[in-house]
Length: 74
Picture 1 (spheres, one colour):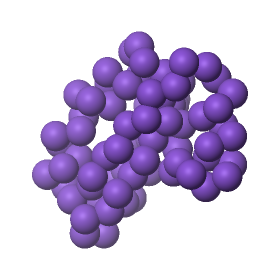
Picture 2 (cartoon, rainbow, N blue to C red):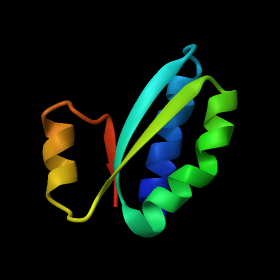
Picture 3 (cartoon, helix red, strand yellow):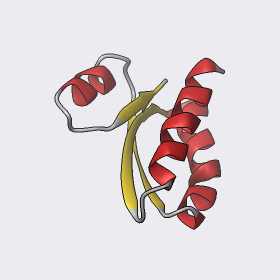
Picture 4 (cartoon, rainbow, N blue to C red):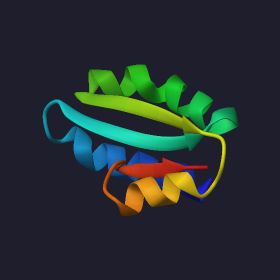
């Protein structure tokens, strides 16, 4: 739940800026599904959410540390 709140806070901060893109690395179930659920709401706020699904818990951290993703959610 804390991770979800952190992502929501980050997205809310981005929503103040117009047409931002947020790329999130996520595990398939349930995290990518949750992000897909909020994607239309974020689009209304001007945030284009790109979700990249990973099957492990190492690569999302690597992607974020190398600035290839904005956040991870798993």
